[in-house]
Amino acid sequence: MADSVNLILERMLPHLEELQHTGIFQEDEIRDIVKKRRQMEYQLFRRPPKKEDYLKAIEFEYNLDKLRKLRKEKMGVVGMSQDGEFGIINRITSLYRRATTYFKDDISLWLNHIDHCRCTNQHTMTSKLFGKALAIHPTNVGLWIMAAKFEFEERQDTTAARVLFQEGLRTNRESEKLWLEYYRLELLAVDKLRKRKNVLILSTNEEAPSDDVMDYAISWLVYNEAIKSIPDNASFRIAFLPILVQFEETHKREQEIYDNLLADFPNSGLVHDAVAKRNWLRINNEDSLPVSKVKELERETERLYREGIENLSRAEVPEEEEEVSLWEKYILWSVERLQYWNRKKGQANESGITKLLDICSKCSSKRKLNESLAVKMVKLLQTNGLHEPAGILVKEMVILFPFSCQLWLIRLHSEILNQANFETLSDLFHEAILSVKKEVHPLATQIWQLYINQVILRHSSSLDEIESVFQSCLQSLPSASSEPILLQYLDWVYISRGIKSIRNTYKKMSKDNQQSLSICVYMKLVSYEVSEVSINNRRIVDLFEAAINKYGCTSTDLWLEYIKTVTLLGSASEVSDLYWRATKTLDGGLIAQFMSRHSCLNFS
Image 1 (cartoon, rainbow, N blue to C red):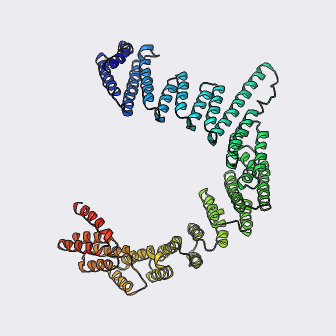
Image 2 (cartoon, rainbow, N blue to C red; image 1 turned 30 degrees about the horizontal axis):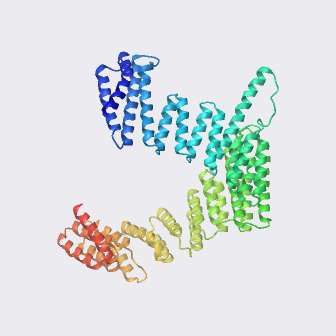
């Protein structure tokens, strides 16, 4: 081991002497560098080797190189001396090579090694490293793409990039990402040839040859091979289109893909959506289109959507799910159209709103519109700042889906933001409450909470009116849903009427057999008693005992809270009795949990 370490250190001497000679490092610093490297080399020669040791050694060399650059900059030295400054880079390369030899399966080490060589312009070494890494990780699709991209972009070697993709696809035949990137490569290769030939024509006045290569024939072959490998995936084929439209003179190939999709997937809502939105994609990609052309493409998009829906409804074997999917995409496109005109004109197009409502009405009449889609549309409009169209739409959707808590909440919030008068708002709340009365849904409780908050906000001085609304709510909602309202009611009573009213309310609730108080309610009542200036210990104990009678067998939290509160009140002598009662009352499986948590409570 010692001989190997000494040999490695001896090989470092020329570049270290060069660094000392140029004045970048002093003699004592060189001595420290040698000492540090010696220590690290002994660690690296240990068996079994540790990845962390290699990473520490590499980090040290990177820091050393940063220091070298800083000192060189201060000294005003330009250029790089062969022996001195390349020595650190070569040392890092050597460390990475040794690390990847021992830890071949660690992809992060390979990527770091590759990145180091690429950043230091060691392009030949980088290509070799990609080859070695891919031999060990042949199923890593991202690595194949990185290697091909490096060859094409940095080494300008289209052939090498093409070979890499072809080798990768032999191993990963069904990788969608690899096929798509190979397709992009072939398009980029033709685009590069086109630009080069255009320059040659301008300089020599020669006509450009028209051949199959210039017509994207190779990329078309790649597409055909891809769909043979992955034949039944429409979304995969559609993914080729956004790549294709980025290049010039691709309309012929684009049309071939659309024809291919319609031929192989005639009953796919996804395909009909892609066909319909073909022209709309053009609008989004070309900002300079005149308004007349935009409207023409818009009408064509709408026609294709209607045609697609009609074709799906007349299919020999109608597919309900696909038709619903296309209706949904048609409606969402209508929302997108509104957003487009809003960006262009600064306000929503009234005819666009009318068309959207008309589409929704037709969709509903054919029983293809559902509540979730209605909610999605309204929220999409609101998110994009189209509050007026959203308000109009939600009114219509509430009529179509009167039992939808979500839609009612959106409409109520919309009216509140528009500062509707309280009489109108109150009528709307009552209509919403009656519509969703039978719905056991958390959002039904939110409607009541919103109503109560508005009543408190606008009628803060009328306590009787607020009390009446609270009581109506508590009587209307099932006990399972009413707890948030009950807790809010108790807070309101305590703040507005004080502790005596809270105690009277508790007495009434205790006498009401239908009112089952939860642990949260009992804890809320305890918190009111504890927060009083003059604390009544007896009332607090009574509340805990009432809760223990109902939940003592099943709640460790209740017992722990009881013990904690009694301790704070200064009745420490009762704690041991409560502990003993808890162990006798709790169900068998909870006793150990209680004892464990109680011990933590004692030490906290």
